[in-house]
Length: 378
Image: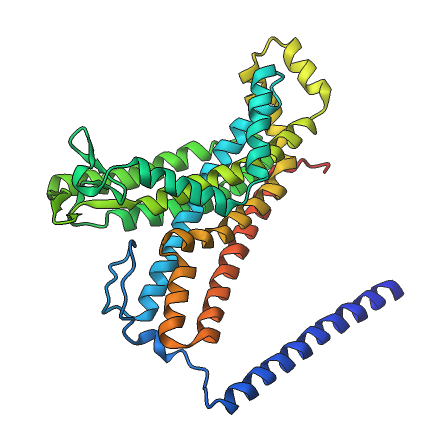
């Protein structure tokens, strides 16, 4: 009881100190702004921004409000973060398995890749890839055509899209709720298994339902509405959809950079599996692929999940380097808005809250999944 009182006292003292420091900082900022006749206000978010961004899921123009432009930057950041997390996970998993495979050449190649990516700045990798891709790809007027559907230039990748309908918004919304549905239904399936002993599958049924919900409107839209095709007009293509070269380069650069770090986490997690598990799998006649998929990886996941969560958080925050190649993420939009409105405190507060909210959601989801995959005795 005395120990609990002591712990409560010190925790309360730390909280009180932090509150006092926050009050002092806020008072100091307010006093300095008052001397300069500046009043904190977020009314500017509804005023006209006066600038456009290169790409967005939202329809944004120079007449859009600052709030809408910032929302477009947030969506660009989320899309980039999701794509980079998936890319880094796939690359890291494959390289990590190869690094622990026991194959002489495979281990050396994987080790070389890991050492290069871990010891080079991510910004250097980004700029090198950007210059290489922009130099290798043709200009818009000489773009490469694939199957008469896709046009590739050093500016963007162009492709036909459905003119009307929910389209990409519907697909992104469903993909966003997909991991939440998997986690929640997995928890329910685990409770049902504890009671009845029957384990119902979750991942593949939910994935098939989500894909069906995405594909059905797309098919109906394709039947009901014509396709919008990219057509060369002047110095660029008009119509259709596009994915900018900046986005592609960012996905490649961050996936490759963090893929090397994820590979080391996978290698360490595989090495944490007891040697007896490897020997038992080999004695059972399992191939290397079967042993890895059925025996090793399910046990290695338990050790890798917490560190993987940190990597996902780092990837989300590192999307801010898109400013170096002109990608319109949250940091890019915020920087332009600050230069036009001279509201750094308000805009930086909004950006901080957005990044904090995204990272807290990612941490929450990783913690839930980590608690689900841990063994009962751990």
